[in-house]
Length: 273
Image 1 (cartoon, rainbow, N blue to C red):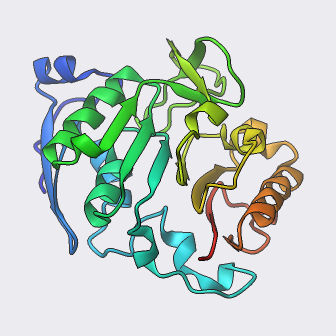
Image 2 (tube, helix red, strand yellow; image 1 turned 30 degrees about the horizontal axis):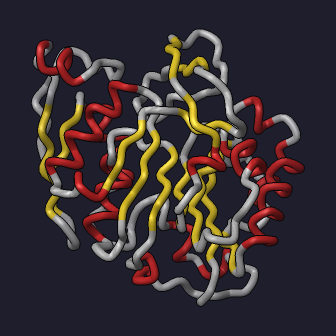
């Protein structure tokens, strides 16, 4: 999985521009559960995204991490990773370049489909390419839009140096583009499972969900370091975890993580039966 050396990596580039600049790179990654092919724009996307999410062992990866720690669950219940291999419709919030969707649809073939929202057009182009490269394009719908707490028109979207860290939150000094939106409760129609990695927007989105009754599992990356979540850090995080406690049988979360200096944490909610 060696990368050729390139002079620059611009994660804002679209697929055509990446090809024209000679930056398009193919990565083959063998794991215990699938042999993957990914197309990326350079070294940063390999180091910061593929290596974190496409692990050799089937239980690896940041999104699965809380599920496999029974001591994080107040009920002490162990989670069987095979419980992810069910006929779910996953809502993938923060689709990026398709890594989560590709992994779920290959590692867990019983999953019916993934509906993946990614606001940045250039990321969507790479996601579609990666879905096709791994033969799961027919089971994933990529939607070029940001998910918002309520219905609204286009919004500003702030681009980061890492293609997986773009955000709807206003961040000084970042380039911005305008993106379309879909409200969360419309996006949830027909969905039975959620993965959420939306760079600081998760607090408002979780609060805005009106009906959790059809959601059997939810995986969340929570970002304490954004100003919107660092102000009132402990109260806001407890508010979100209480929503999960109300709607799931088991909640996997690092104890008192809101009191630590952690910048990012992962937690999960699971319904039994």
